[in-house]
Amino acid sequence: MSPRFRCLFCFSLCAPYFITGPVAGQLKFREVGSVRPVSNESPSGEGDRDSSLNTDTAAPTLDPRGVTLTKVSDGDGILPREHNQKWREYDIRPYTSRVTTTERPEQAVIDWVLRETGTEVWFTEPFGILNASKDTLRVYHTDEMHSVVRDVVDRLVSSQAESQAFGVRLVTVGNPNWRAKALPLMQSVTVQSPGVDAWLLSKENATILISELRKRTDFREHNSPNLMIHNGQSQTVSAMHPKNYTRSVRLRENAFPAYDLEMGQIQEGYSLQISPLLALDERSVEAVLKCQIDQVEKLIPVSIDVPTVSSARQTVQIQVPQLVSWRLHERFRWPTDEVLLLSCGVVATPVADRTLLGLPKLVGGDVGRADALLFIESNGKASQTLLGDQRSTDRSSPNYRGRY
Image (cartoon, rainbow, N blue to C red; front, top):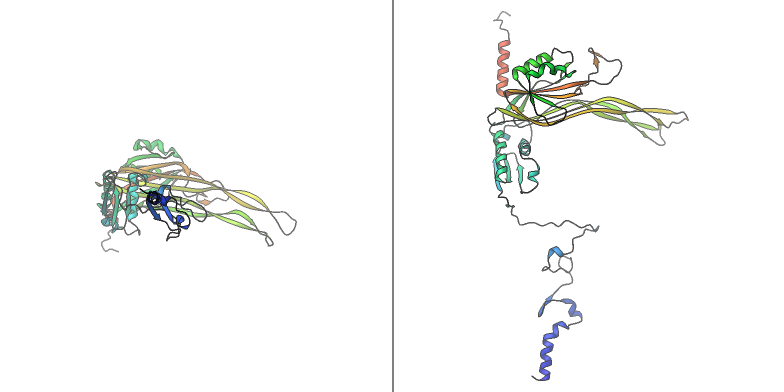
């Protein structure tokens, strides 16, 4: 090979590595003999970005404040199935079509499913979905979870959402010594809430106990004893009343008077919510109970100095409430032919008793305490209960046979 030909051959092999000037800024070398043009600006305006680079090593996206933004992807559009999850749809129209007391009857289905399964199973592994419309409950989860969901839905749908009659009676007794004679009539039940006792009684023994309690001078009943509740739905009984007090003082400049009194308000009384669910055979019932009692025990006065136009000193009085509250949130299960009795212990009375021998107290004093008792019993389907009550009323009505 001649020297001139040999030089031309070597230059053709080495030329890509010796290019300089403007052309060099437009070329990017990936391997020997491979040349790829790169634009200084991408169409999206994001600058030079090589799509062949690993996205994990790319610089993070920053907002104008310099904060790193969360990386979001569209995913592959396929639901995870690592634990053999299945998609199923449950027809809940036989239940929701009969519940007319609320705009969203399907919420009760969701609530009872979460009570049975727990909440965390829908937000951790394995991946799951729980969604309800007025017609359909959609569930994506394992076979074990579907078995639990199916049991809850059957208990709601099979009852056809007919209203159930429940006797819910809230009473108070001033002294807890009623237990001395009543304990032989009752069977103790385990309770998780501190300070709360529970028993089961036959309906006959419950009638005897209430009759004996009514003979006491410290006995008070706070609500009507019967409620009509759709199976699975919630019903609330409450007796709340506002109590106003002087909360604080707000000073004003260049005004007369130089202050304003800020008023506050506290809701006193009790609120009881019950959500029952019958078993498929209707031989047992379970209920979630939420009860709260709030009472202003007394208002503690505090004197505050306020400025006046003259140099004379002036004071105003504000009030700091001393509250007494009690809470119960628990779930119970018992046979439908028995009565559940709960004792909340000696707590603030649900309705403050500010009378003495039926007359208003002339001198203010601390509110009282009482043993709050809650009787709950299932009286069967509402239609049957109302029919039975009507027949009893007809039998008890006197028949004058046209003499009057």
